Length: 152
Image (cartoon, rainbow, N blue to C red):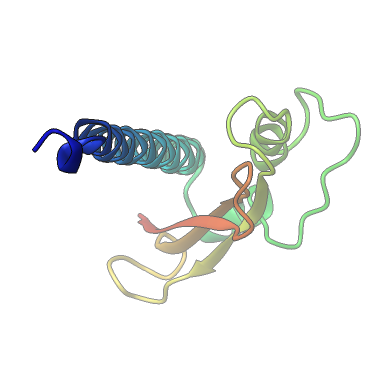
């Protein structure tokens, strides 16, 4: 009887080790996925913070359509070096380009359009679109965050 069962315990041990190692590999894969999702959430939150910071700058400045279009124009070319006399958009873009917030960031200038008569007179109501794009490390697809706000 002993002869027919030789090596069965070794086979059981090998199967148990295989099942355990598959479980450990699954846990490592879930941990990597959780870290990636956490990183992506942080980048989205940073992009939202930066876009809302620019919107706050627009709301605290003179808010009529022509002034917003001048200070935050989508056709604006930022001078180098950017100093305190630069437009608010150029100062914001300098902070963004420093790389302290998002990796591979591209800040598109806000598109400011005067919204005729949506809420107020044409000169006091503007529709603003802000887009912030970034490329996460080891992620081939670029990500973007877009906010559309009406400045009254």
